[in-house]
Image (cartoon, rainbow, N blue to C red; front, side, top):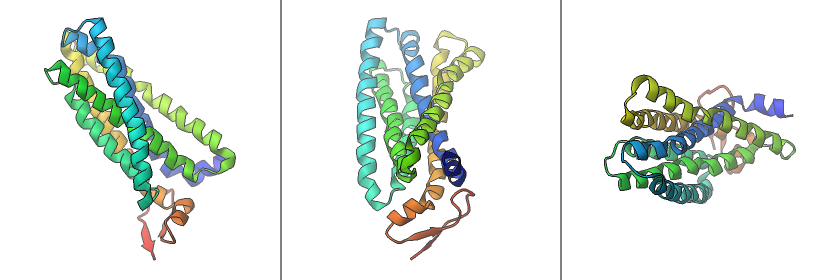
Length: 232
């Protein structure tokens, strides 16, 4: 049954899971190298970094998870696909904050922007999972969730490694880590936003979402990317 579900929704699942993975890459990369940035670039002590980055992670993560979920629930009144639209804008927000926090000279502003990265990158996790569970049959929701978290972990684990490779190869100076972060984090955020945007069409063409849209049928296959046509 899980194989049939994946086959039927392969285009949506590909973009959706890639978007989740890229968001995870943002959080893992930022969490892994944020402390190094504040030590090398801003000269902060380990105790300063631990307190400030911990607060940024906690505050940003809570705001992102809860705020993203609440916002997606509210906007989903206009259609279930709006949960994915929230994810698109969250990715764009993470890209802006992600390119800014490594490059600003004020460490206090950098911490605020770091919290914004965690907030925006955390918003899609609840919203994207809710969108996925809506179309998953009850009998395979556990397997669907497992695939979701597998994609999240596999792609997300690349974040710290890519920043390290980029820093070692192209920015070997002590403060070069800031430039590696300023490339990888916004790039992953933009890729997440693009993937989520590309998942909206196939998602709207699923039978479950069409039924929830109040009788407005969106024609076109849900897995081949063909343009959708709305019929009253």
